[in-house]
Image 1 (cartoon, rainbow, N blue to C red):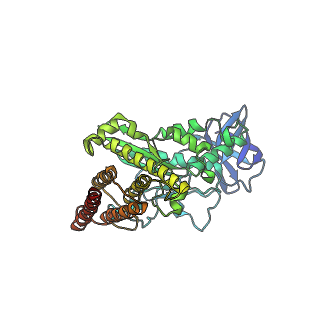
Image 2: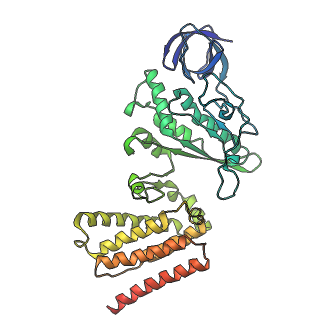
Image 3: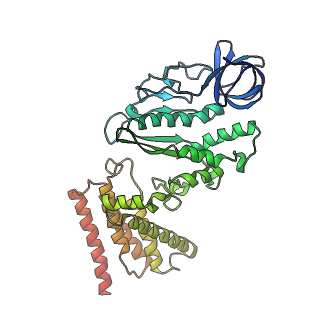
Length: 427
């Protein structure tokens, strides 16, 4: 077993003089009294190894002994992982005593209690099929950097058993910041905003671990990775966001303006995107399982929203009376899509969980309304008509799909449209 002694300490980065062979990314243990602090070798120069300690280095001093394990960072996989709460080293947080974590404390990763969150679809405890790996932003950077890999490895374990596993990382910005801190301490060449120059490649390599695999028994398993980004000041041009958007097939941009307007969910329909709409395989799937031309209808809805936003900007600049009613019609068609389709009420038992069949029906219903040509003399008429239409559509969302109440509101909506058409015909 290779041993060594600490010759210098810079925050969580320690320099070790070693007496034998050491491998890149090998795990070593700093012997500090009764405490054994894990660290990972991140650079080797002849007989000197640089290691990033996973925990606080307070109390560590020059001259302490270090033992090298001969192994890379490993986690324990097996029955019992679900329902656990781990830190980035796979210590079971529920087994640790006290409010604060104790430096050097280790626990067996395969036991723990369950939370009482309820899965709205099944009625069972959500924690029964959930594993949590958590680290706070003030923990050592090496621990934060390892957390996402621990979570992904656990997900791959279940994927290889034929399960469909989602991985939610909150947030990849903190992970990228830990990569930046490690890179800076190693005095490596810095990229934009001092992030490592290989940041894009690192993010791409991690995202590439997600996907579907075909197993030897003929079954399939999959990992779906969902990463959240916390750009400073909402700047979508910063390196982490830019690098993620290059590799992510789907991107949800949260809008502060929608949050301020209490329009939930606050996903911006314009800045968000899905590349799957461009794939022939996805188009074929939607044509077969939803309806023919589904992706074209989605694109048509997006076009209506874009035109409505442009009309809104004109109205705000010039005023309600200074633009023709057609601008107000475009604006209110966009509002119809927003209120009746994009928005969702998480406090309503029906609207909080919408089936694909219902979404398909409502999209077609709203598209039919928005594709109609209406003539109005004043912008107040436009506002009054579409407000009533939105109310009927919202009431449909709050009632069971195709129930008598649902159908009654649909009848009233159709009568409203017919009355408006008849009024135009008389003029």
